[in-house]
Each structure stands twice: as C-alpha cells, then as structure tokens.
Image (cartoon, rainbow, N blue to C red; front, side, top):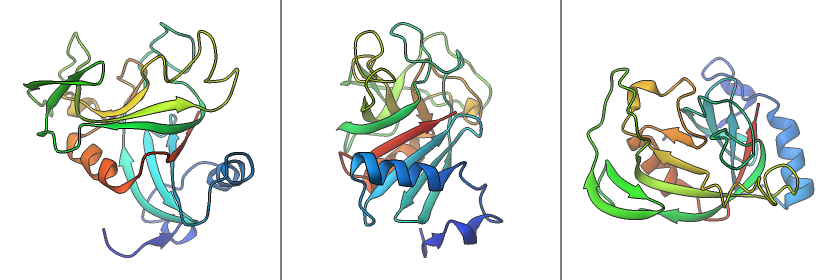
Length: 195
C-alpha cells in the first residue's frame, strides 16, 4: 500500500474526494470520529470510495452505486445518503466469488465477468460490510432503515460494470478490492455516503 499521502498532496495522483473536510468535521463533531480511526467516504457522483485515516488518503476504489439513483425508501433499490456505521463484517476467509444470500454463505462460487455482462439477479460475492444508518429520518427509522434494507458494501460478479451506477442499492466493489478493504477496516468504521 505504501506511504500514506496527505489528501492535499494526492490531488494530482487521485481525484480529490468531494467535500472531504466537511465530512471529517461532521463525523468528528456528531459521531465521535477520532484522528487515528479510518473513515470511508463514498461519492455517488464520482463512483468512488475513499478510505481516509486522520486527514490522510489511504486508498481510492472505483465502485458502483444504485442504477435506480439515490434514496432511502424501503423497496426502492436506491442508495441511501448520510452517515452509516459498519455494523457487521461477513465472509472472512471465504473464497473469492463466494455467493452470499441474506448474509449467509451459500458455498457456491459465482463466475466473475470483466465485460459489460448485466445479470438478471444481483449476487453478493466474496465479502459483506453491512451498513447501519445513524441519521434518524435520513437512513434510520421506519421504511428508510439502511440496516433493515440490507445495504452493504460487497463484491459483485459484474466487475465490468464497476465505475457506473449498476447496483440495487448497495455499494459494489471488485472482489479483490472488497477483500482488501474488509481486511483494513474494523467493525464500527464510519461511512459517509454523499451525492
């Protein structure tokens, strides 16, 4: 992974995370983020996931959010905004491509596609970081609860669609990337999802 770079120093190396300073201030003031803890910033407009520790950018991943847009309503298949926490980590040690149903390892392995294959179903593969919303009325509460909606950061067999909105509400990652992120961040890590 190499030496950590400051966010300001990495602008030419990576795309600058949108409104990262505002997100850091929010998470520190309202949710107790400490300077030595990881945080995840998801940008829907850039289709990027930024892993940040303190004020240093650790890694940038290309991702996919919902093809149905932004929203929190149950049954909408949209990606919710706001502050979340990783409530559960599922799949440690599972083989790459392992399919999960409702968080349970099926012991089946998905074929991974690097072309533009768009499967009818939405298999969840390799690792799951299950998000719980922390903002009542935004991503927590009746009919809008991210945890009850099973909003995850997870792997996908549709790796060729990463970088464009393609999910059914979750944050999809390439399978090797989701393993790396899963191994880096602890349960309880704060996740800020921005438009």
